[in-house]
Image (tube, rainbow, N blue to C red):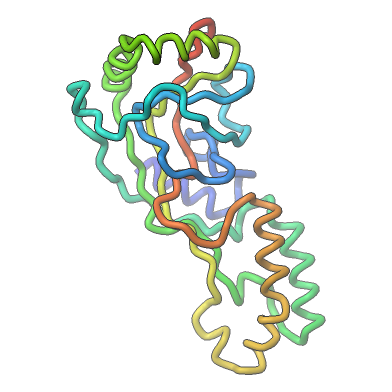
Length: 225
């Protein structure tokens, strides 16, 4: 329920990205193959802050199946869709696009004609105790232990939870019924896509994308979360 409420706040446009609103850090661009329990690093000073989007690089061998450590695999917890058109980073750009719509003889704004959202969103998570068990198991492997040591001055993070969804960009139903409207939208659609991609560093389709994660800081010299 808390996750649904936090995501609803995101839909309301109350935050600047899709991370801190629900206690997670945003991945830009979204990634595949980010597994709960596994360990990654970021070329940055170790931090527990969630405000800055990032991109994860694998550190130890990623492990999608946690049962080898005696831990149950996380199950999907459905949460609310995220309407990306309400992302505050897009507001200035959308105003400019609305002006272009008017110049083409179209009324309203971009959100009247297009949907751009993360849908089929689920949260996958394990407990702190389970995360500790997995970490201890990975750290017993010499290669993983040495890799963590090599990145002792950078951000080493274990994934406690991920938010996964499908990215959808499409015209709203009914917006292309009128051939004249459809033709006008065809003129502006490349600009709409380019603006969204530039502003949010996202694509326009994709299934099973991890767009936010809950980190546990594992840099040896850094304080734990």
